[in-house]
Length: 318
Length: 299
View 1 (cartoon, rainbow over the protein chains, first blue to last red):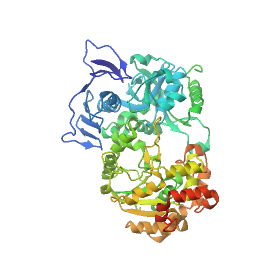
View 2 (cartoon, rainbow over the protein chains, first blue to last red):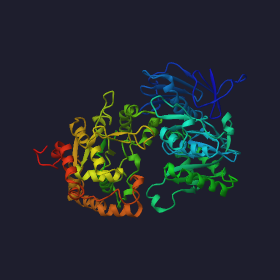
View 3 (cartoon, chains in turn orange, blue):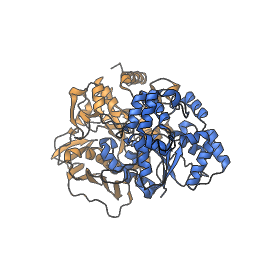
View 4 (cartoon, rainbow over the protein chains, first blue to last red):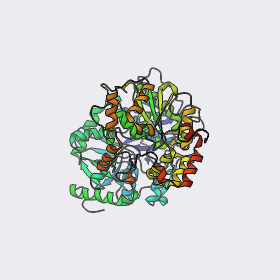
């Protein structure tokens, strides 16, 4: 059995899952989540709602990636998976630790954002956006500049109802495409492919962080990533960081939940409103608009560092 | 169930213009090029795939993505959930259908399913066609290619948009099959009724061409409304909007003011060398004759 800390929860798995934070088995307590191989039905009886490749029935969820893997998620505490066709487990694990675990967090009633995160001044800054927004790439470029890695794709937030908001790490690896690895000169830190058929790889972060052991860091702000393009591009600077007001922050935070459709479906809009208010309290929610071009990556990070100096988060240029 | 009307074209053949015309048909005031829906309005939207299927399409190969797309479109047609070009509700004459742009050629998945979900979910396809001799310069400008490179892409049966594998393209891969292959795939499939809309006919008279198309689709629209939509979508107006504020859907590297480049028909007479013109006429003879760009018999 393998033991991990994922998004602040103790997880056991009957197969090793790369890129995660390993931990010792807890002698005194049962795990929060169990991941195991087993028989998974093709459909759920009496499902309440469904999508093209998923079904939900009460606190049970079935997610299918045809020809690759299907899994059931139960009450936020268990994932059972079964490979389809000729697929080997190594080529299916990323869907279990990624999509499967993320949806399980919704079942668990936790607030989960679609974002990467880095450590700035002992706290965590989130970079949110849909797939392809540049979350992992920006976090990897920041790690090369000395900012510790906290999360690559999913950030669970806790402590929303008052006090300090905490960001829980999702693993200890970047997941980067070959192009980004080449452009950021990270070939030496690059490991196994995320799936054997993909030119996307696990990459060991440059900078260490308190989150490496699975510990949560206090939230210092949420940055929503956007590409500089018309009509914004023709109107101003190449890199802009603009604070959202609370109303817009609420919309942005909810839209950047991990799988936003699940927020509404599970009736958790209130949780994300709380998260937006908590983020505003903890440093703010901002829109970061920049060209998506490796040549201006340093310019983007410089702008962030100046911004953090202005807000008092960073004492000096990293 | 809200059936789909596919707005299908090879890139740079007038799809955006057709979408703007349709959007203006349903609008109460003139729509700008940046207000007719974002990248989500296209069949190959990655974000919509991820949002609806609850998985990251970026972790799938192009072929694995394709395998899931038919079920995605069937689901969206059943739920009326596609974010369409038009459909503001109210008195939109187009509101009975979901009008969705697609640069995907008509292809089947490895399992033999039509990629776009087949005939049961689609009312029709509007196939937007433009003289390939005019497409080549527009495509070269769009892709930052030479005219020769663009012509080679148009002749390549393996050509695709968003087909790279060393990074995550912004959209799902769209197999184009080359210019001729694209149009042949659509007119030879038998699942979805196809209505041809020629760019040149839009240019000769947008209101008439649009009216004829909609009549063929069984949609009646008053002539005054067609005229208004045509005026609101006039090329000079579109170009001025792009010069003023850019076009959200244009490739970023184009900068400002070049997505809507000339909008002319017959510009090839000045832009193409004799060799290149002959090459395109040779590469696409049969389809050019089919759509009236070459005399019958030359094909």
